[in-house]
Image (cartoon, rainbow, N blue to C red; front, side):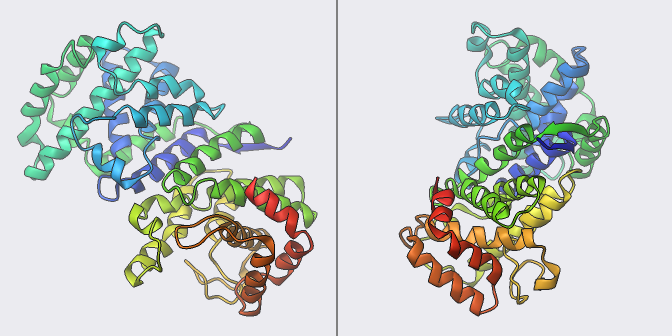
Length: 407
């Protein structure tokens, strides 16, 4: 079993970047919540792993949000079915060996303290979840103030008063008191600005070193990314899983080393993470995309690379994932690379992506069978788009390729 040296903090930060794409304009929410929650925790004397767990849960608290519609609801101070994304996010984190310890905190991060305090769960989980809930609502109020005023300080007292009103009901009294203490300073609010939050995050990242992860651990972490994007649209559900499985299978047929096959699988899971920026209505459109919609769609592979490129230990994986729409004749995107600039692994991902998309139901057509897919692949080879050698390999094992892509 291969071991990968990956910085977990960098991976979590990149996942937060992916979640930021869903908001389009309402960005850095998770990072701001993590900053405020951590500062409240420090005020209460929380330290070490306890504080780091709070920070990780806070930055990932909205991992159950994939669609732009649900994200739009987050800007409301309270709304019906707000617990749905908590449940989805908790289930998602529980699926990863490296993140499952954060699951219950995310599950209860919209639960009022008046209810939460009676639940039979560890006190640390209650306090972390409620701290994140309070910081989350502060950020929503702050965004509302900034929409009305250019300077957040003009709404500082109003925000503090609204949080105080919920003391003992929505929020734990100790947490509210800690927030009121630290938020009395102007500096607390100035730190919510984009460049200041980035600096705060950089400091957090600097306190984590690379660690050895077994493939199963890294795969569990990577699948959190892929499940978020696949949950964005019913028509792309399980697409990433299918591309990952097919890419790994094809790598084996080419007798690539086991580590390369593992990395192909991971790149398959990650290749569409940039689609989180694409509005729901474009992904679900039943007809052909217009020019503007096509431009929006075409940048997703560039965004995939932007999210993944800073995770040390995953450099090659991020490249293969980002190049899945490059074409051997240079007509692809986002970098218009030619055949000589594309590794075999990148060309395998590209074919696996096309094959699985054709095999899957989409809003504009039904699933295609193997005998219907092959002519389309061969046509793309003839037009210089995808690699002929990879397609020949698919043709020689087409029934198994279809099974693997759809399993």
